Length: 103
Image: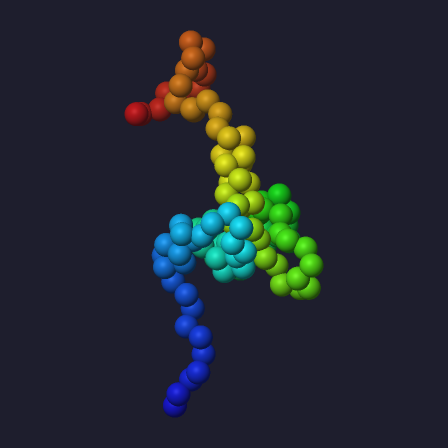
């Protein structure tokens, strides 16, 4: 019995291809999921639950969602910069409260 189905693309291979893409390259949900290191199902779940959890998609393609690679990279950089706060291990001269951790 021969089944003619497309084999799922390996995320590692997709990530290697994404490294060569320019900022104007358009990617689909499978490639964006590989870029974010999550599954496609999780990508659509995040889109449904929290629209700020993924970069904004392009408009005008009907039901298909597409993203510009440059927008995805910029969105990831701004999220990294916004979440970069002080390290939980740094005390900055303020005495810690609670039970001490083993380092």
